Image (cartoon, rainbow, N blue to C red; front, top):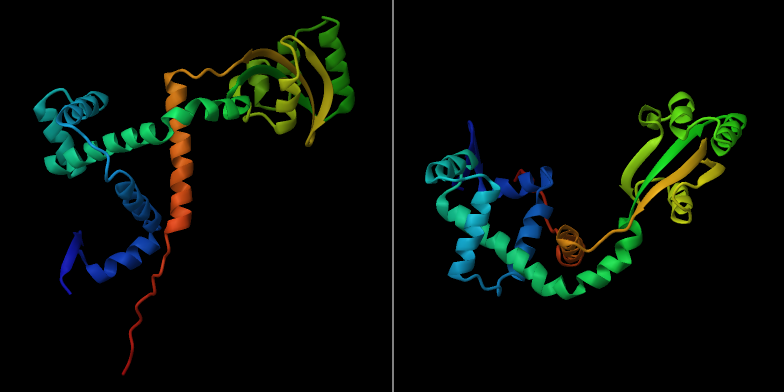
Length: 249
């Protein structure tokens, strides 16, 4: 069988490729690209759209001159034709996302919003109930600031920031802490609460409601697209690879 690939001093035939794809776990990636090609097969890309996509690609990669484009192609070991196909495919995928999920973004965002909202909060954690209670009362009575006590007593990395954490999305804190923050008012110091191995004192500093701005809209599109793609791979891809063994007659 003829050689189809050379890497250094190694040569590979077509028969060698599938076992290598399996060994290096590249079959799912190959399957993904095939599924995408099938999905975008009917998506149109006009000459104007191709030019716009090419210009956008060059801008994103800071390719201003033709010499820079050629240097990029050499570095990536690509031909101009391969680059054009890559850019068109990327454009068609973006167009496919918009056609398929564009009118579903708002409802998906509203479903996801509780996890996308962000919080800034202060945290003290200790493993001693009596210390947690004392620190809580000192903050409540105004004897010391939250930041001072967190720096001195907190046993986590938050001690380095005076207890301040965030802004982070609501999925970032421990679920119990997230629940506490979601029902708190800014400035409210919550009594010591056990979370795992720790006793914590927490205060909500700020609650930042997620907004469906252009970056968020793009993120929602990408999430729906990825969910669809994973489902397609799970449902449609069947691996029937059987290793070839040498037989002795």
